[in-house]
Image (cartoon, rainbow over all chains, first blue to last red; front, side, top):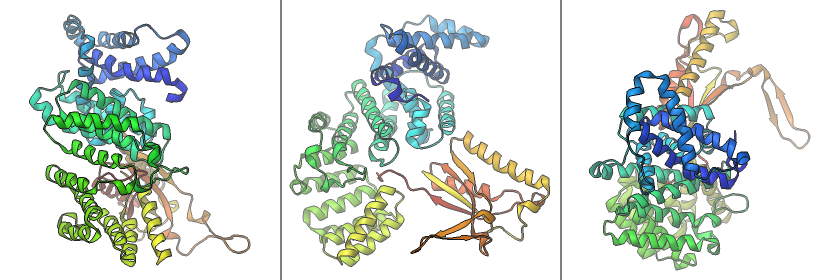
Length: 408
Length: 132
């Protein structure tokens, strides 16, 4: 198993950037996604083996395309039924560099087909477009390599069965499927950002990869404000990475982070991107979440946070993308803006739609604590810790509960 | 999301003798069932691991004390409550984990009669902050 560190950062970046362009070219030429993906993966392995000793070719993408195409041709020759198609396709002209972003985005659309489960789409996108090896993806998700290999193989079969011609979907269909694409990119980002365990390198890499792919999507679809919104959200969130874990690797909540360690350049870039997206006039959930992240990032100290603005943004978000988490966050913002009693009152109002959601207890605990109801907060923190399926959250909630019991 | 499907020695329907007293072909059939189920989960991209533990006769209980730790050897009266082994699966939903557990519960016992062993299903906590 060759990790990115062993391959060397420069070569790794080069391959990562060249992989989707090579794959797009090979899919375009030969039409068979599953085989093309195998061929490019083999070419990448060949490159990782050869280039460090024999030197990097002048045109790395061209080299990968040539090697992968040769493998495809070998395979097709072995399969005489395909010969006619090979001849027809070989006559078609190659795509120019201007189409590169479009090609990469077309691949992402293929990997995020609606028939695929989110976990499968994430894995396939990382391998086919991100150029990560199966071993690297398996390590990031803490499953055996064989399992990840089968998951990717099944996903490829689904994509192949859909027999979609290579290229961006037609505008109407594209609008409809963009949501699934953005969701997969966001999942990749979040997996890399919110994890507290697993190899650090793998996690940072997942977030960086999600940002890179979203940048490409934005290049190809500059007229879609939600793509810019998602990119802004990622940048504004990722900017806090240096401050969000302590020396022991434990998560530090937002109001306790050392804000001087936030990445000011990333915050500025996120703000710029968000402004451009919002100026297009079609506000969506990613832009609203980015605006909330921006409001937090603007506050130099926790007490400078403009909770009134955040409350208004959650109100809008609840209208365009309702859900229990949004409702809960709005209750927290209400408590911060207008006092804990207002937040608790809103929580009561929202009760029917929050029924059984484990985070209700965590939010109620927090609001009870703000209101000075220590025994109530203790009960709710304890209940929340019992119900969560997240290890970092359980540690946090248990500590909170214990702190209150000690002080009570 | 990952789930552990835990199997205990007891918790089977009716009176089933220990596996060491089964007919050889019944033992073979049971082992084949377990291996086939693992292969199926691997094929679906859901398999994480499957582990069996040494028998309850080998189990020891350890308790720290003011002096040396207190170590208790078997056999234990409550050995049927001990863990026999587990599977970990990585699936899309709790429903799917329950479906696999139901399948595992059907493992064949003596004369090929399904054991209907109770499977304990527990979600493994994710090393990730909840996002929704």
